[in-house]
Image (spheres, rainbow, N blue to C red):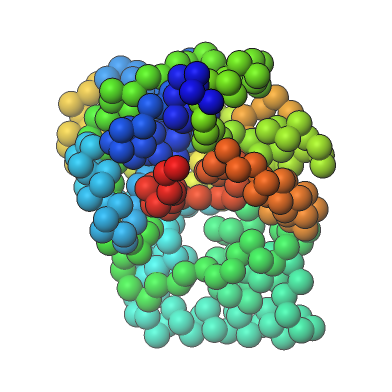
Length: 374
């Protein structure tokens, strides 16, 4: 064992891998971080286009109520004051998200919480009257929570595009609750802290990996025996099923295709995130990246803008996996792989792909910081 070059081989340079590497390096461990992509950072990687940090793999907004995590990431790079306040476009009409008094005023013309609550209660009661027992699918669940108007205009089309299935064919548990705010508040998150790294997420990743050996374009599975011989322990952040050579079958995901455009206008949509909730619009949302870091009239300091249209599609082997499909079949297969993973004493499995579990960024940082070192 003495001829091993490193204490840890970290497979994948996304947020879990980079945070773990930072912690291990600070503890004096020898670390090598490899990534099969041509860049570091995993899905939070940003590409600079026309002076704008473009979130290459979809919008990432850091939010948390964990003060320790917030202070930790800000010790690496300062975060700005970005507040996530998406807008929904349904057949050309705009609605604020999340569902709040601004939304209800736009939808029904109401101006008081009592008026809005009365309409929602009436529509919920109507939906529940047509159900026998508990909601059996996502459509029934949404109707029972917010009523027909909100469901049909702001949930149905968007959800069916996102999952590639009818809401009547999706399980009810996907929507456990739908927050309804009887106040005029467009802040999507309830967390104490949120923002974007000033200068983009690459500054966060580069700060975490400062002083640590990294190699890009390095595919763990193409030279598995070689890489496994390099370190005493492996931190694996890739696909759980691939690590075990798909022994129990492939786990399923939803993936996203991005159509990126640079436009000769300073301000395309006036907001970072606009969801398109009409089923007849093929994309789920448009991201205008400059709004993550430029606020107010500062958006006009750059004459061009970059937008990304997002198309949610069915995943196939070889495509980039994004969202685990946590239905009964996939959960059963994932549990078999997790049982195998527990038997791998020299491998730490961490992150969205390696655990087959959706994570926001802050819990990933918290988990990596809390993972014990050997």
